[in-house]
Amino acid sequence: MRRGKWRDRDGLRRGVYVLPNLITSGSLFAGFHSIASTYNGNFEKAAIGIVVGAILDGLDGRVARMTHTTTRFGVEYDSLADLVTFGVAPAFLVYGWALSAFGRWGWLAAFLYLICGALRLARFNVQINTVEKGQFNGLPIPAAAVFVASMILLFYYLGGSGSFKHFAVLLTIYVLAFLMVSTVKFNSFKDLEPLRRRPFNTLVVFVFLALLLAAEPQVMTFVFATAYIVSGPVGEVVDAIRRRRTKHKESEKPVPGHDAN
Image (cartoon, rainbow, N blue to C red; front, side):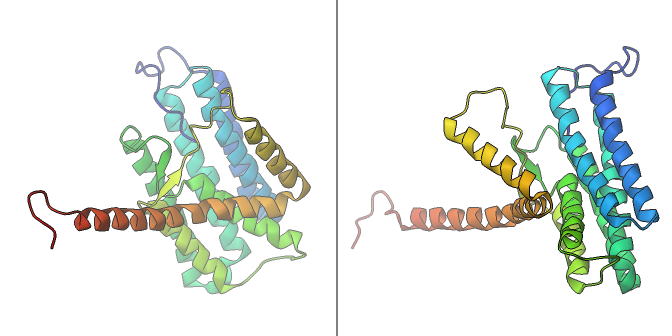
Protein backbone atom coordinates (compact mmCIF):
# COMPACT_ATOMS: atom_id res chain seq x y z
CA MET A 1 0.00 0.00 0.00
CA ARG A 2 1.21 3.50 -0.80
CA ARG A 3 1.81 6.08 1.89
CA GLY A 4 -0.09 9.02 0.50
CA LYS A 5 1.38 12.53 0.52
CA TRP A 6 4.87 12.87 1.92
CA ARG A 7 5.82 15.39 4.59
CA ASP A 8 9.00 16.94 3.23
CA ARG A 9 10.96 17.30 0.02
CA ASP A 10 14.41 17.79 1.53
CA GLY A 11 15.79 14.44 0.37
CA LEU A 12 17.74 12.54 3.01
CA ARG A 13 19.22 15.58 4.75
CA ARG A 14 16.71 15.30 7.58
CA GLY A 15 17.14 11.52 7.87
CA VAL A 16 14.53 8.78 7.51
CA TYR A 17 11.79 7.48 9.78
CA VAL A 18 12.77 4.07 11.13
CA LEU A 19 9.45 2.38 11.95
CA PRO A 20 7.58 2.49 8.62
CA ASN A 21 10.75 1.76 6.63
CA LEU A 22 11.57 -1.11 8.97
CA ILE A 23 8.16 -2.63 8.21
CA THR A 24 8.80 -2.14 4.49
CA SER A 25 12.13 -3.93 4.95
CA GLY A 26 10.24 -6.80 6.56
CA SER A 27 8.00 -7.02 3.49
CA LEU A 28 11.07 -7.05 1.25
CA PHE A 29 12.62 -9.80 3.37
CA ALA A 30 9.42 -11.86 3.03
CA GLY A 31 9.68 -11.51 -0.76
CA PHE A 32 13.31 -12.61 -0.76
CA HIS A 33 12.44 -15.53 1.50
CA SER A 34 9.72 -16.52 -0.97
CA ILE A 35 12.20 -16.49 -3.86
CA ALA A 36 14.69 -18.59 -1.90
CA SER A 37 11.95 -21.08 -0.94
CA THR A 38 10.87 -21.41 -4.57
CA TYR A 39 14.48 -22.05 -5.58
CA ASN A 40 14.60 -24.86 -3.00
CA GLY A 41 11.32 -26.33 -4.30
CA ASN A 42 9.29 -25.42 -1.20
CA PHE A 43 6.37 -23.76 -2.99
CA GLU A 44 4.05 -23.72 0.02
CA LYS A 45 6.54 -21.84 2.16
CA ALA A 46 7.16 -19.45 -0.73
CA ALA A 47 3.44 -18.70 -0.95
CA ILE A 48 3.27 -18.02 2.79
CA GLY A 49 6.14 -15.55 2.40
CA ILE A 50 4.14 -13.54 -0.14
CA VAL A 51 1.08 -13.40 2.13
CA VAL A 52 3.25 -12.24 5.05
CA GLY A 53 4.76 -9.60 2.78
CA ALA A 54 1.28 -8.37 1.85
CA ILE A 55 0.32 -8.02 5.52
CA LEU A 56 3.46 -5.99 6.26
CA ASP A 57 2.92 -3.92 3.12
CA GLY A 58 -0.54 -2.99 4.36
CA LEU A 59 0.88 -2.02 7.74
CA ASP A 60 3.73 0.25 6.66
CA GLY A 61 1.47 2.72 4.88
CA ARG A 62 -1.04 2.88 7.70
CA VAL A 63 1.70 3.31 10.31
CA ALA A 64 3.27 6.10 8.27
CA ARG A 65 -0.06 7.92 7.88
CA MET A 66 -1.10 7.47 11.52
CA THR A 67 2.28 8.70 12.82
CA HIS A 68 2.59 11.43 10.15
CA THR A 69 5.93 10.04 8.97
CA THR A 70 5.27 9.82 5.23
CA THR A 71 8.25 10.83 3.08
CA ARG A 72 9.24 10.67 -0.58
CA PHE A 73 11.98 8.22 0.36
CA GLY A 74 9.42 5.92 1.99
CA VAL A 75 7.16 5.98 -1.09
CA GLU A 76 10.03 5.11 -3.44
CA TYR A 77 11.41 2.42 -1.13
CA ASP A 78 7.94 0.92 -0.79
CA SER A 79 7.56 0.70 -4.57
CA LEU A 80 10.92 -1.06 -4.97
CA ALA A 81 10.03 -3.52 -2.21
CA ASP A 82 6.64 -4.17 -3.84
CA LEU A 83 8.28 -4.99 -7.16
CA VAL A 84 10.38 -7.69 -5.50
CA THR A 85 7.78 -9.11 -3.11
CA PHE A 86 4.72 -8.92 -5.35
CA GLY A 87 6.35 -8.93 -8.79
CA VAL A 88 9.51 -11.02 -8.91
CA ALA A 89 8.60 -13.46 -6.13
CA PRO A 90 5.11 -14.48 -7.43
CA ALA A 91 6.33 -14.66 -11.05
CA PHE A 92 9.22 -16.92 -10.04
CA LEU A 93 6.94 -18.95 -7.77
CA VAL A 94 4.14 -19.58 -10.27
CA TYR A 95 6.68 -20.38 -13.00
CA GLY A 96 8.37 -23.01 -10.86
CA TRP A 97 5.08 -24.38 -9.56
CA ALA A 98 3.08 -24.62 -12.79
CA LEU A 99 4.14 -22.54 -15.78
CA SER A 100 7.47 -24.19 -16.59
CA ALA A 101 5.51 -27.16 -17.97
CA PHE A 102 4.08 -24.94 -20.73
CA GLY A 103 7.46 -24.07 -22.20
CA ARG A 104 7.60 -20.73 -24.04
CA TRP A 105 4.02 -19.78 -23.14
CA GLY A 106 4.83 -20.42 -19.49
CA TRP A 107 7.84 -18.14 -19.13
CA LEU A 108 6.14 -15.51 -21.29
CA ALA A 109 3.18 -15.52 -18.88
CA ALA A 110 5.49 -15.19 -15.85
CA PHE A 111 7.43 -12.34 -17.47
CA LEU A 112 4.23 -10.61 -18.59
CA TYR A 113 2.98 -10.74 -15.01
CA LEU A 114 6.25 -9.19 -13.82
CA ILE A 115 6.42 -6.39 -16.39
CA CYS A 116 2.72 -5.52 -16.00
CA GLY A 117 3.24 -5.34 -12.25
CA ALA A 118 6.20 -2.97 -12.77
CA LEU A 119 4.16 -0.81 -15.15
CA ARG A 120 1.29 -0.79 -12.64
CA LEU A 121 3.59 0.50 -9.90
CA ALA A 122 5.13 3.15 -12.17
CA ARG A 123 1.70 4.35 -13.32
CA PHE A 124 0.48 4.56 -9.73
CA ASN A 125 3.43 6.70 -8.68
CA VAL A 126 2.76 9.08 -11.58
CA GLN A 127 -1.01 9.25 -10.96
CA ILE A 128 -0.86 9.25 -7.16
CA ASN A 129 -2.49 12.69 -6.87
CA THR A 130 -4.92 12.37 -9.80
CA VAL A 131 -6.71 9.07 -9.21
CA GLU A 132 -10.08 9.31 -7.47
CA LYS A 133 -9.80 8.91 -3.71
CA GLY A 134 -10.76 5.49 -2.41
CA GLN A 135 -10.04 3.72 -5.71
CA PHE A 136 -7.13 2.09 -7.51
CA ASN A 137 -6.72 2.42 -11.26
CA GLY A 138 -6.08 -1.20 -12.22
CA LEU A 139 -5.58 -4.25 -10.02
CA PRO A 140 -3.04 -3.52 -7.23
CA ILE A 141 0.03 -5.72 -7.54
CA PRO A 142 -0.20 -6.93 -3.89
CA ALA A 143 -3.73 -8.25 -4.56
CA ALA A 144 -2.54 -10.10 -7.67
CA ALA A 145 0.36 -11.61 -5.72
CA VAL A 146 -1.87 -12.68 -2.83
CA PHE A 147 -4.22 -14.40 -5.29
CA VAL A 148 -1.31 -16.35 -6.79
CA ALA A 149 -0.10 -17.32 -3.31
CA SER A 150 -3.58 -18.26 -2.07
CA MET A 151 -4.13 -20.42 -5.14
CA ILE A 152 -1.01 -22.40 -4.31
CA LEU A 153 -1.84 -22.63 -0.60
CA LEU A 154 -5.30 -23.95 -1.45
CA PHE A 155 -3.74 -26.55 -3.74
CA TYR A 156 -1.63 -27.96 -0.91
CA TYR A 157 -4.47 -27.64 1.59
CA LEU A 158 -6.60 -29.86 -0.64
CA GLY A 159 -3.92 -32.55 -0.65
CA GLY A 160 -1.80 -31.59 -3.64
CA SER A 161 1.94 -32.19 -3.74
CA GLY A 162 4.89 -31.11 -5.85
CA SER A 163 4.32 -28.99 -8.94
CA PHE A 164 1.05 -28.56 -10.81
CA LYS A 165 0.12 -28.28 -14.47
CA HIS A 166 -3.22 -26.95 -15.65
CA PHE A 167 -4.17 -24.59 -18.44
CA ALA A 168 -6.34 -22.60 -16.01
CA VAL A 169 -3.22 -21.41 -14.16
CA LEU A 170 -1.65 -20.16 -17.38
CA LEU A 171 -4.83 -18.31 -18.32
CA THR A 172 -5.16 -16.86 -14.81
CA ILE A 173 -1.69 -15.28 -14.95
CA TYR A 174 -2.48 -13.63 -18.28
CA VAL A 175 -5.75 -12.27 -16.84
CA LEU A 176 -3.99 -10.91 -13.74
CA ALA A 177 -1.38 -9.19 -15.92
CA PHE A 178 -4.11 -7.58 -18.03
CA LEU A 179 -6.07 -6.38 -14.99
CA MET A 180 -2.98 -4.73 -13.46
CA VAL A 181 -2.46 -2.48 -16.50
CA SER A 182 -6.16 -1.98 -17.21
CA THR A 183 -8.24 1.03 -16.17
CA VAL A 184 -10.67 -1.12 -14.17
CA LYS A 185 -11.36 0.54 -10.81
CA PHE A 186 -10.74 -1.36 -7.57
CA ASN A 187 -11.59 -0.25 -4.04
CA SER A 188 -8.53 0.90 -2.07
CA PHE A 189 -10.25 0.60 1.37
CA LYS A 190 -8.28 3.66 2.51
CA ASP A 191 -11.49 5.15 3.84
CA LEU A 192 -11.76 2.35 6.40
CA GLU A 193 -10.20 4.35 9.22
CA PRO A 194 -9.86 2.00 12.23
CA LEU A 195 -10.07 4.79 14.82
CA ARG A 196 -13.43 6.15 13.64
CA ARG A 197 -16.72 5.21 15.27
CA ARG A 198 -18.62 2.55 13.33
CA PRO A 199 -22.06 0.93 13.69
CA PHE A 200 -22.15 -2.03 16.04
CA ASN A 201 -23.00 -4.41 13.18
CA THR A 202 -19.71 -3.48 11.50
CA LEU A 203 -17.79 -4.90 14.46
CA VAL A 204 -19.85 -8.10 14.33
CA VAL A 205 -19.11 -8.54 10.62
CA PHE A 206 -15.37 -8.02 11.09
CA VAL A 207 -15.26 -10.44 14.03
CA PHE A 208 -17.14 -13.05 11.98
CA LEU A 209 -14.77 -12.66 9.03
CA ALA A 210 -11.76 -12.87 11.35
CA LEU A 211 -13.09 -16.12 12.83
CA LEU A 212 -13.60 -17.59 9.37
CA LEU A 213 -10.07 -16.59 8.38
CA ALA A 214 -8.64 -18.13 11.55
CA ALA A 215 -10.63 -21.36 11.08
CA GLU A 216 -9.80 -21.91 7.38
CA PRO A 217 -6.95 -19.52 6.43
CA GLN A 218 -6.07 -21.21 3.13
CA VAL A 219 -9.67 -21.33 1.91
CA MET A 220 -10.70 -17.88 3.12
CA THR A 221 -7.58 -16.15 1.80
CA PHE A 222 -8.37 -17.56 -1.63
CA VAL A 223 -12.04 -16.57 -1.31
CA PHE A 224 -11.20 -13.00 -0.22
CA ALA A 225 -8.60 -12.56 -2.96
CA THR A 226 -10.96 -13.93 -5.61
CA ALA A 227 -13.84 -11.74 -4.43
CA TYR A 228 -11.65 -8.63 -4.57
CA ILE A 229 -10.39 -9.37 -8.09
CA VAL A 230 -13.89 -10.12 -9.37
CA SER A 231 -15.27 -6.96 -7.72
CA GLY A 232 -13.41 -4.71 -10.16
CA PRO A 233 -14.86 -6.04 -13.46
CA VAL A 234 -18.28 -6.56 -11.88
CA GLY A 235 -18.29 -2.97 -10.63
CA GLU A 236 -17.38 -1.72 -14.11
CA VAL A 237 -20.29 -3.67 -15.63
CA VAL A 238 -22.73 -2.36 -13.00
CA ASP A 239 -21.55 1.24 -13.55
CA ALA A 240 -21.89 0.85 -17.31
CA ILE A 241 -25.47 -0.44 -16.96
CA ARG A 242 -26.26 2.41 -14.56
CA ARG A 243 -24.87 5.04 -16.93
CA ARG A 244 -26.79 3.51 -19.84
CA ARG A 245 -30.06 3.61 -17.91
CA THR A 246 -29.46 7.21 -16.87
CA LYS A 247 -28.70 8.21 -20.44
CA HIS A 248 -31.81 6.40 -21.66
CA LYS A 249 -34.02 8.16 -19.08
CA GLU A 250 -32.61 11.55 -20.02
CA SER A 251 -33.27 10.90 -23.72
CA GLU A 252 -36.92 10.08 -22.93
CA LYS A 253 -37.54 13.39 -21.14
CA PRO A 254 -39.75 15.76 -23.16
CA VAL A 255 -37.95 18.72 -24.68
CA PRO A 256 -39.10 22.03 -23.06
CA GLY A 257 -41.37 24.05 -25.36
CA HIS A 258 -42.60 21.02 -27.33
CA ASP A 259 -45.94 19.37 -26.73
CA ALA A 260 -45.93 15.62 -26.41
CA ASN A 261 -48.30 14.00 -28.93
